[in-house]
Image (cartoon, rainbow, N blue to C red):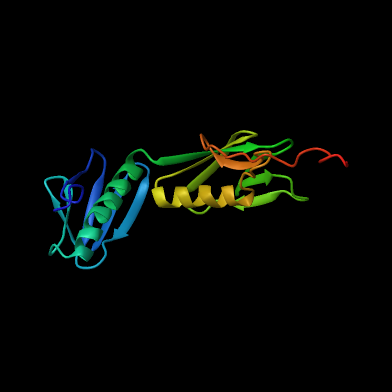
Length: 183
């Protein structure tokens, strides 16, 4: 049995879960999320905890068991605490500005890049060079942060661009000056 998959997902106070067929809906203070469990796996609500079960020890079922349990646990944590990713903008004149629809990025193009936040995601520029992406869906927060980073990924020569907070960018040596002298 999967070490992760066999663990029950406890529901904290203020969180309710509803299992309909293979769909799990979780409601909490930060919103509502739903997930459809793949394949023949089952989900039960027992004693204030969600339990993911598998029908056999087939490799396919074993592979899906732990992943499904983790996704359900992420939903529960998301509706209680939420998730956030922080991005840093590095470069002279590079900055971000919070707008009602999302964020406007000035990252070296001839025009500002407008990024619209999807439903359930809040994007703020805490400082002109720090962007925070927050929401209750872990997968969606990560995807939106990756899309913002893809607007201008960090380049290896000067390190300019948008990077995750704490991300290390491997730097390359640039060209050497005038080159070799003639003999």
